[in-house]
Length: 402
Image (cartoon, rainbow, N blue to C red; front, top):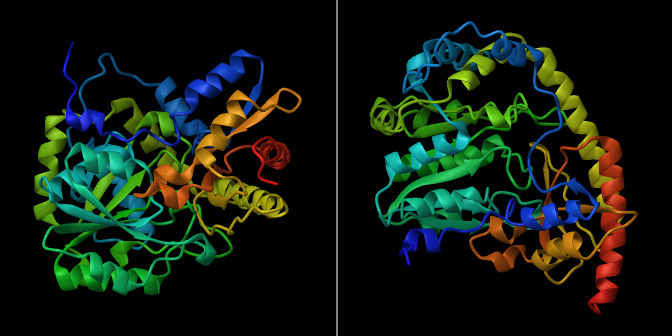
């Protein structure tokens, strides 16, 4: 019998994907499943991006450059110039196979076995997996739903810093909560990074989708830590191109860049076709982004209103991304989410949600919470809220919670 590594045995299951077999089984029984569990938008990818791939004039699909092809890196630099970061050049960018690989490059560049990264929680569940792959310890700083998942006090971060701390990871706006960091909050993190000479890894893949006239503040806006910032970006959510697997790691630090490029060379190259599609998407994106932002705003407003009408449900209104962190009046959302797929249907329909235990270092903190993604059409969100209300009532009756 083959021996399985300790690393594999301790790899956490994805809270977003581990229930997929139950959803598949439900569909095989003829039940329609509304997928609120995953950040896969139903928004159409820009036609210019699709056409660029369809009309490709290549005889050979060659390796791309390890750091990414120059045409795409130029497009990225120009995009960042529109954000006000005119000092960035193509040489500041390393193109990656999705934002996930960019995070892997950042973590593996900064950390050795046993080192630590500090992350406010709840956090993107795959941060745990990325850290575990490299035997790096995640040190969590909890936030709470009653504050809308606001950043914990800066003193809480200070308490967590040790001689093993290499970075603080933030996602802004946040996954899984949609929380948007203020300039004041980020300024305090910048001061900590400068004081302790650690790096801020800022995951900014949802930058465009910020609502109510708010503005996303990038960690690049703090010159005092210009050498201590890595920004993670991706085209997956910006242009609804999750399957293209194109992201990037950006830093002003030549030292960090030159170390990270070695990891890029070791994996050979990022996806060529994805870069072609993304380059085309960047050429006329302003109207597209504005239209999509408006749609997400309407979806958010509808969903949050409907959820907060359900007795016992608590749903803070997110200011960014397309997720809600939601508390439900159930005993265990892991059990509830599986029950939705195995035992519940209304008119042959059910919903799939992501239990939030997997978004915490201590799963008990998310035992009554789920992440809901408003990536479906408004009529589907309305129906999903109806199903959730009905399901909660039936679940509470079945398990004696009333």
